[in-house]
Length: 375
Image (cartoon, rainbow, N blue to C red; front, side, top):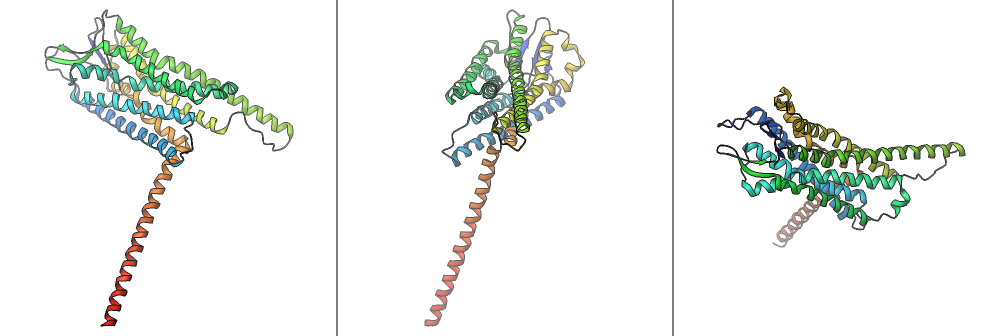
């Protein structure tokens, strides 16, 4: 969440898993809010939190079960990226959506100065890391498809270094939050976790930098890499088709791009498409409110649609894990196999219990029968 204080524009609070889309009149002593709209915001955040928590936990469990059931199987590069993407999305749910949910319930921040800075540091961490790990994944797929010879010398250790770099950048870009935000009195006897810019023009610079670093720049890299990948896949498919036609028979030729790579490309294109669709309304609204001083007077700004739409920036953290499971058969099978194994174990246990019970009753009956015979 980022709250911004603008020059001659009052106090603008933009929220969504980090930024809020409501305007507060801090001159009113009763400090009112639209309770009907707040109830919808709370319901939306609660649903997003539960969906992100459940989905990403399932993905992490599937990756763990895959390694547990087949210890000799190493973690593939794609699974490494999915692992870290799920951790980033899980952090978005825990450090971003959940604090925002609590904040919406209490209306004003109740945690004090230290917790204010900690919450503000943690809220962008999930979105930043998710964007940069997505970018790292795209660059990895780009090298694998467009430059396969160079990629063959690209070890898994380098992939891990790339992931570590993505996390390091995410942590570094969260540091300004500690400087910008503080627990302060926004009106008489009303305290909140608020941002202050000195000079006030720093608001535009900070919001613009935030938008570029967390969304616009990663999106440009993602569009370029996956456009190049799609072009390479298209050309590769055409070459294979021509080779078959020339030979005049069903000649099996090994494709330069494997089916597994194409499947991972489809998976990441789905994730990136949803990332762009869910994040762009929030970033556009943020830039609009910051650069257009007439935005707070717009009917759309005060409407419910704007408030709910800006909450959707974390929606990709809820949907991503289900995309991973739907398009990655290996992870889905790991979960299904574990469920089936658990059921078979339970059935086997029940069968053994019935067998033991039957054996016990039979032996007791025979013992009583022998005793009667002897008497």
